[in-house]
Image (tube, rainbow, N blue to C red; front, side, top):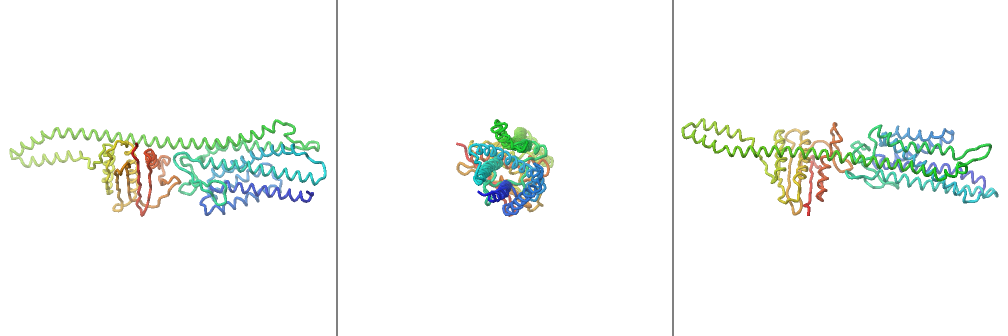
Amino acid sequence: MSETGFQIFHQAYAVGAELLYALCLTLFLYPFMGEREHRRKKGAAVFCVYLLTSLFLSRIAAPQGSFILVLLLFLTAASNALELGKHMAFLLGLLYWNAKISSGLMAESLFFIGEELVPAPTEPPEAVYLRTTVLLTLLLLSHLVLFIIMLYALLRRIKRRMPGGTFSPERGSGSPFPDMSERNSNGRFSDVPGQFLPSGLLELCYMSLIPAAGILFGQMIAGLLYEIKDGQLLQLYERHPVFLAVVPLLALLFYTGGYLTILFQQEMAVLREEQAAAFVERRQVQAIRTRIQEAEQFYSQIRRIRHETRGHLNNIKGMLHNGEYACAEDYIFRMDESMGGFELTLRTGNPVTDVIVNDKRQQCEDQGIPFRTDFHYPDSGSFDAFDVGIVLQNLLQNALEACEKISEGERFISLAGRRKGRFLLIEVKNSFAGDLVFGADGLPVTDKKTDVSMHGIGLSNVRRIAEKYMGEMEVCPENQIFRVTVMVQEKS
């Protein structure tokens, strides 16, 4: 290769490397950037900004590390336009650059080994240029392979979900990375249960610590790899051969630390979700137990009244015998009043479901909400009454809250449930107002402003109980009617 050809290659190499790195950043961010139809424009903007900034800073000989700061500032400033969120944009930028530097240090060690294995010719110059061209090409290719593997592993980790929801593993157009589609009602990633995303500044600092340390380590080593002393080029690995193994190992550890931080954060998020769900379930079970105790007291009073009825009848007979008809009528009226509260209007076939359904019926009656029911508890003992009670409690409570927002005359609640073969089908329908926004888990996103972390868990608990009985839950809003169908299967 001639000197002119080598100079052309060197310039093309620098531009080509930056093109590939810009493409890697674009593909890394692409699955996060809003709706699919808008991603291409945003991806093109990220690609162009990266490339132009890189070329500009290389021409003005900017200080080492300037590009990292500029990139992070750009991603943070443009986070709203990219639909990433400031914390998410900053963290993704750090993860990208940590992977780039870590893979680069590992590739540099391979490059040094290649230089040692391939003898360096002293002449002719064309052979020297050719050898350098081959080694540089191999360096870039090895770096890209390691870099892409690291980025892909990060996205696989981010994509992975524990119980409580799933990410969609679809692929973006032309992207080798998995798609990410779990967003909040604003279409952006947020701190919902099960996600690794930083929900506050303190959590962002915690998740950014290891990637930032890896970047600083890489910048320091990059400044020490090559030095010129007394007109002679000195290489770090020549002066300290042990660093040939230590440097790439430390780089890998910094990358692995960032990866494990994401994993730990995911596990903690899932644990918080499970604790919140367990807390709500315990609270619901406690409420059901309290209502059952009230029902037991109710039945005790019924038994007491039945015991006292004979005495009342004797009193009425005496009044009638003495011709005190007005007193007898008043006596019967007062008895009717005293017994009016001792009535369970609805009989479902189980004391637990009796209490819950009648309680919700009474709440509907107090608020003027028409309540229709055709629920029958199965005779089989294969279903835990408390599990069925939690399903009814959550579905009917959600229906009540939805109907409270609607004017009278337009609201209703309907409960149906009966056994079909080995299955128990429970269906609750109610009217609702406005538009519903669904999360990636297929459940409606709450519009409540207080204690948001505890809302939305009710339907999650219903789904979990359905899955416990090898069944499923279906949510279907249509024509301002919200319908939830739960199917549970009898355990063998």
